[in-house]
Amino acid sequence: MNITVKALNRTALLACAPFLGIMIWLLLSDIVIQLSAEAFPKPITEQTRLPESDIKHAAAGLDLAQETASQTRESIQRQLKLYKETNADMAKISSMAASQAMRPLQIYDRNITSKLGKVAGTIESDKLRAQLFYIKAENFSAYALKVKLKSKDAMTMSLGGEELGQAESTLAAVNRHGAVAGINAGGFADGRGKRYPLSTTIVDGDYVTSFEPPRADLFFVGLNEQNELIGGKFASKQQLDAKNPKFGASFVPVLLRGGSPQPIPSKWQTSPKRAPRTVIANFKDDQLLFLVADGYNESGSSGATLGEMQLLLQRYGAVDGYNLDGGGSSSLIFNGRVINKPSDGQLRKLPTHFLLFK
Figure 1 (cartoon, rainbow, N blue to C red):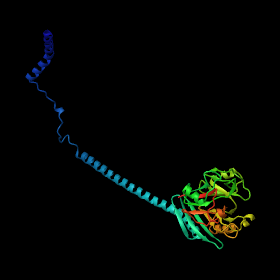
Figure 2 (cartoon, rainbow, N blue to C red):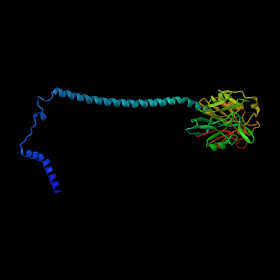
Figure 3 (tube, rainbow, N blue to C red):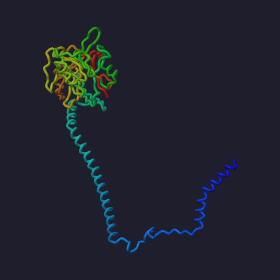
Figure 4 (cartoon, rainbow, N blue to C red):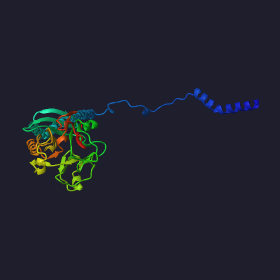
């Protein structure tokens, strides 16, 4: 083992000997390392100094660049200010144009409202505006409900229960569906202890009864997807479907078309002559008008004639008007209250109701 250690020591000594020799030589020798003059920066002299004209030219260039940058910044700021002012002006012009465009509608609305009289109650929301009016005619008392629909879900028509053939009062329908107002809708026929909607009836875009072509002066009336009143006698299902009905019911007769009174069938002039009545109509701006007239009974001795309802529609400026089920069926609910005086002494249970939602 000692032999091996000695061998390793000799090997290490031999390996380090050259480096030790070089270090001793460097320490003992007088070596001087000199750098050439080119290795140092030359001092600035008159010969190496830039000409004064070049310095002035460079300075002038810098000044010009700074001035150009300043002018550019000011120009951009002016443009931004002008852009903002232009946008503000355009917004004012757009607002003014929209206001001016609405002005004829506002004037028209004021005109028809003034014809109806003093507003007795208003329901206003982002979905609708419903205004209630009390009307005192020569032979009867009546109520008008002017409705501006602002949303597609502001109005619908409901059945009198979960199943076809069931019936409930308009107040019950209003409460069950959470509506703010309700009006009785189409006619009905009783059978086997149930009360069915008369003729063609559509709810939520679907036919809940089969389509029936017009007969015995029956018509269909309802709303389409654009909240426009559609109505009349449709010879085929395709003809009615082309109107894109959302909901609607059937009854008799048509009272007004294009502002002109329609002939009232002789049967409906006398059977009964006077009675409680419910009418639906529209104005030129697509607002709806519901008229409900009071009567003590259905014997023909009290209430309104259909001719008198026509006159009211014309007086108020309605375009199209349709007679809905009347007599003991006439119902007007507004803000949770029964507004009219039902001739039965209480609200009749019906299979269809027009409902308004806030």
